[in-house]
Image (tube, rainbow, N blue to C red; front, top):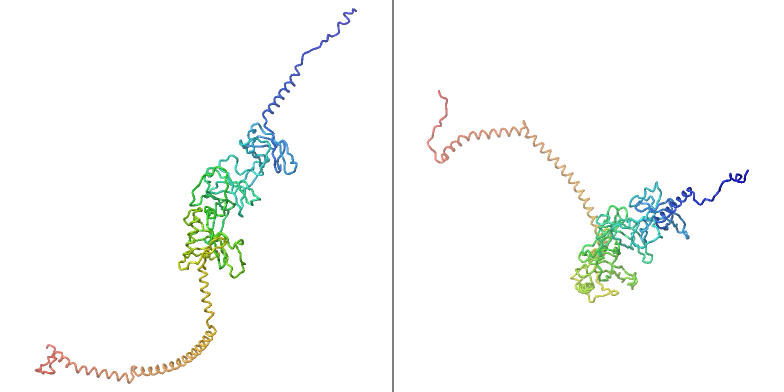
Length: 542
């Protein structure tokens, strides 16, 4: 065998530089995966962190973040805060939500909730809790947020006006309580803040459009919670609000009568909450003149805020009763007069509510005191015993030698009230009665009653004797009368005698009848006799 034939059966192996088509499949998959990664990265929103007090119902990778019921994010992780004061969740937001994440954006957990405003979050009974976002386009961008514990009462962006109300009284309000205007619910309480330094409660309130246009500089707010019964000097007052405020709390507002509307409020402003309309209305009087009353009688029933009236018109109010800072005498001293500080407001007496009006009122009051102006405590309500201060002019009063003052306040002289005067007169009458010799009067009266008793007994005995005598006499008289009547009975002698006498009288009358006929024909025949006339007697015709 030749050498050429020996190697003819050996394969010819050569190196290949071409790639196999099989490698195209993973390469394309890699390109697609990188594209998806880029697409996901370029379209996903920012990662944010939200701090909550708790994470009840929240699950990483499942709990969604929604805005207007649209999914815009997903919870990625849940961790405790380092100080254990709450939890912090990390959430991946969508690209569309990036512009909505500002410092004014709010988050809260949506769960089933029952409140005064109704029932909400019922859909989470099946789907589970989720985080709701109230977006805001105003403010700078933000990625770290503190969530609300409860959903806001008024959604962000609702047209209207936010104001702040404050109160240091003993009535309180809750979130969702109503703001009422003439029976219509026009707003709600949103947030509550208590200032420890001022010891005042501040309430953030939202007034819905278009009712926010009613809020002006002269607007006053007052409490209309539930039903209030007030017994005062003016009697029983019953105050109620709307049906909603009967069950919960609430306030109402208006411009008091007699005040101008004032300038409209367009941004957050502060207002006080007053106990009632009268208190709110009285605040329009900014100036007043203080006077002192020195009361020698009791002040029980007189309260701070009681009205000061002039002939039935309210001209001021009571400010203080027996102020300790003014007292210089012992209260138990017999000569101690209780000081009462009152304020008369010039705006109530047709004067300007200004310092000029104050000066005019002071001068006028001094002149009236010299003319007989006096103050007295009058009973405004007999049931409650509430008192008020009444000021009037008593012309019969002598002008005081000088006008006194008490700690810088002009003193208006006082006189006892009418009831006190009546009581004093009654006491005087009783004292005079006590001075009468009542024991001697009683002794004489007792003797007189004894004599009267004796006389009555004697009269009774005489009456009994008289009754017996009269009855006996009447019996005798009736017996005699009966005997007399028996004599006149038919068949008795007396009766027969009477009959015979009557017959004799009748016979005599018959005998006188011819004479009477003659006198009838000729009355003068007895004096001048005439020729005898033969009497014609009628006979029967033959």
